[in-house]
Image 1 (cartoon, rainbow, N blue to C red):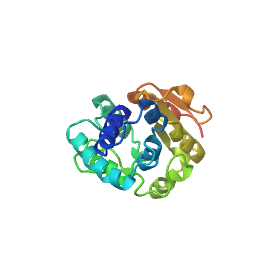
Image 2: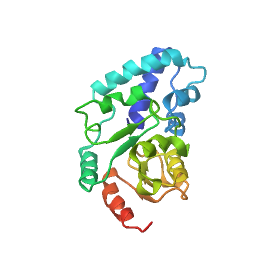
Image 3: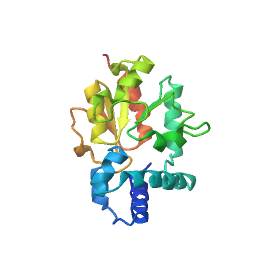
Image 4: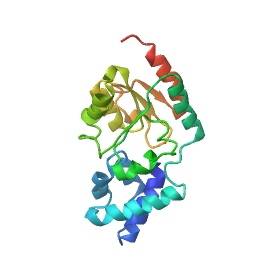
Length: 208
């Protein structure tokens, strides 16, 4: 779900509700927050009970039209390379369950590659709270030191760092710059997701 596509989608829903559009600057400033927490900032006074169902039906149309969650083939090949290297690939997101359900259906490119998915529907805490990883760690039996989290927002870095995990800042989305991150929480940075494969391999060779 790219930021640019989400910006267009959310403004379409706001227009259908007769509300003025948000600015791109405001959307970027709140990108990474859970949707229903971000929207009152993006559109003060918004009726979330009306927005939620309308967003869901509009999102489903965008997905069907191939406008959301279009994952480049090179990124899928990178996931395959991690799996072939005997890495477990898990998904942890701030999205609501309804926003990720289509990605977890059998046959979806993501569903066939992840061994677990954690979202607002099955976790008690959300990023940047480090406890966002509690369920993932409990279910897998992994320790934070065995995990590397890849994300594109400062909140991702804070959550991973607070949980004791290595963090790779991915700049591919173009939403953030490396200067936006607290370097205390950034283990490595990559310009495009496929670069994650050699970086994970390098980090796995670091003692401790």
